[in-house]
Length: 105
Image 1 (cartoon, rainbow, N blue to C red):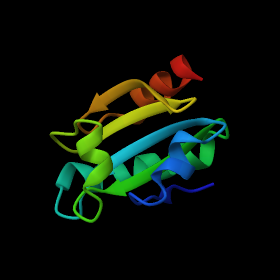
Image 2 (cartoon, one colour):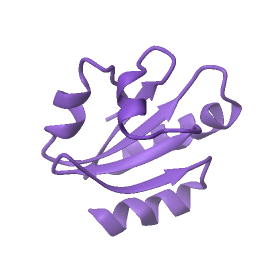
Image 3 (cartoon, one colour):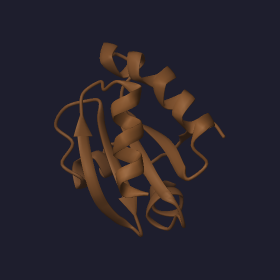
Image 4 (spheres, rainbow, N blue to C red):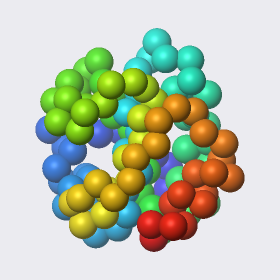
C-alpha cells in the first residue's frame, strides 16, 4: 500500500472513521523537510500493513490542519479510533517512526 492523499472533504472517512491506525502527514509543496520525509513515509506505508499513511497538503486543505493546531510542517499525527494518540513534528528518521508506530499499534 502506498500513501494516500486526503483532503478536508475526505479526512473524516479516511482518517477518523478508519478501522486501523492512521499516520497523517501534514505537508506542503514548498517545504524542504516535507519532501525529504515523503520517500520515508512511502517506504513505511509499503512495509507496515498495520498502519494507513495519509498525506494532506495544508495549502489546499486548511480546515483539518487548523482543527488539529498544526503550526509547523511537517507535522505527523497518529490517529486511532478517531482520536489523536500522538504527534511528532519535523523530519524524523525511518527507525524513529517505526518505533513510534509500533508503540501505538
